[in-house]
Length: 431
Image (cartoon, rainbow, N blue to C red; front, side):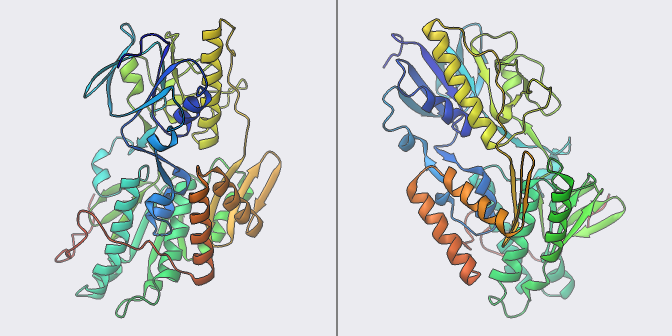
């Protein structure tokens, strides 16, 4: 089938930004091709709950084809971009080229290890469903192996979890892991006591949640410490291997290390032949176009975008959604012969992070909320932004069940490495 009779819009990435572009153009006389290397749209803000057995993968993900089923002008392709040719106006997939008149790159970001990519095998990050289920497997296997450990030192190592990075993901993981160990698993084992699990949250900067007001950072640290989390500020990881991590001169033997310290953008800048910033992002123009390329927009975590005051727009879902809606309006204006909007300005929707049961923080303009009220608002906001009514009902039911009975029903160990126990303790980290 050919799509040459109407303007061709290609959107790469079915995350918050890409989906917003496609939906914003849903009634336009266009041929839209939406491409993603996965077949599902993922609600990333709740991904940590899959990683810590609070929710199942299907609770926070939806098939892209299902989401686009009523949008007759849109076809969906599952594929991975290998190159972009702006001169010929084609993108290259493994299955062949796809031509475009307008291109939107919303390809997101992956884990960044600050030049130490070899750490990835020992300290997985959290960006995809595969990441979440792999982390869940690591965490639950650590408890299983500790139950069978031949000596107390090895059991203690297996019951040590190190989380690197004190941003929202690190904070939410730390709180969820602590509650998993001290609440959900407490009656499941006979030899080990999961309440003895040691959870360390390591942050190289001077405080947690650096983008939040300082008073909320302090509250977050105190709330985590009440859960039993050890918070280490001003400490950078200098070595990481199968046995644990090294923080300067201190070696921490750990059964599980999780990475939430940095991200690096997709190769979009390389595809387009433009200079990236230090995180690999495309430094876009005020109207979110790639520099020097009139018909290509870059949004979401792939883009370095600034507000008129020079402030960098954060890499969060509301920014990507607003950018996607902006690009849809810009494309419609271009096709109608109207002047497109000249500058995207992010309308702040606030910053939210949950710490654990009945504890969260919210910063919105001059409003500061913490504790129980913030936790309820955080939950309501996340349920509201889930795509379907079915998933809203499932997530609310799961949360209420977990809240009432301290249970986590998704404690399944599946996938590679789901069986078998490592024989003998690894060597402690060196460096």
